[in-house]
Structure formats: structure tokens, C-alpha cells
Length: 185
Ligand SMILES: [Zn+2]
Image (tube, rainbow, N blue to C red; front, side, top):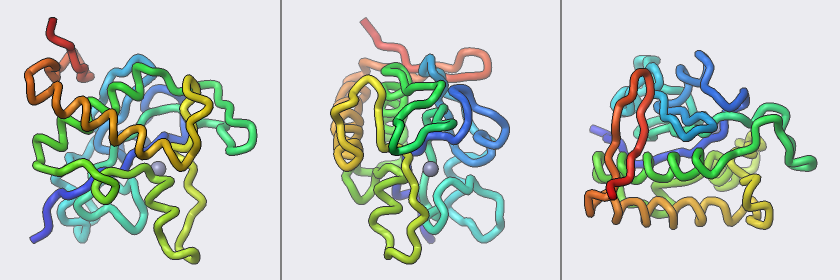
């Protein structure tokens, strides 16, 4: 019996708010305001992927893998590094806080084997299986952070949020059709 053991972090191909395709593909999608939208499938649907009813976010690595996505990679290319929807601090912070919260909920340690960007997942595969994924290789407000250092940057931030959440400093709150983390003062 497999269980949930890892996270893959994505950047959706569309605009900076989730569309139906995004909600089908990822367990959670985060818009430019840092609002978190739950997808159609729950993380537990990815424990068994043989029934076809699961979030298909990471080809070749969906089993036991929770898919989280920040929205807005439309028109982004590695060379021009621009999109109409640049990633916001609120998006990245919400992504890391959500990942921390879920890692505690499902008892998953945060290291490079269990939390990775889709880009890192792709780079680690055999060459013939690589799909040229570029999510997440650029954070607009941190232009000097290289593609290869973004995974570590995010993991460090996720671990920081883990400690804060364990100390009760953030609460995960439902607000209408989305969720938000609120800092306790
Ligand atoms: Zn992806």
C-alpha cells in the first residue's frame, strides 16, 4: 500500500487565476493574491493512480505525489522570462505555507527527494524521458535566483513555515470558495 510521500511544485500554463483545466490537474492552485483554490481531486486520490481518477500533474511521477501550482506561466519562455502574469510574493509565500501545512498533515519530511519543482523532477529523469519542463525556473521579484537554486529556496521557506505552523502562528481558513493562511498576531 503506497501512501502520499511527496510534493511536486508547478506553475500553470494559463493566467494568474485557476481555470477548469488547472483545477483538474492540480490538488491546489494559487492565484496572484495568494488565494488557494482546491482542485477537483484530493491528495488521497493520487495514492492509487490505476483507476484514472487522480490529479495528472506530473507525468511519470503522479503516484503518491501531491501537486501544488502557482498560476500564470502563459507565454513565459526561458529566454525572455516574461509573462503577463509575473509571480507575486503573495503567491510564493502561500505556496510554501500550504506545502508546509500539508507536509505536517500527511507526515512528509521536506527535503529534495520529497519536495521538488516540476523542473527538478524533469531534470532528474533519464534524458530520453525529459519533457523540458520549466516550472518553476524563475521568480520575477528575485531575478538573480537561478533555475537550479529555486528548489532549495522554496524548501528552505517551506521548512521555515513548518516551524511557524507548529507554533500555531498561521491558520488555514476557508473564505468562500478559496482558502487563505492568516498569521496570528
Ligand atoms: Zn508542471
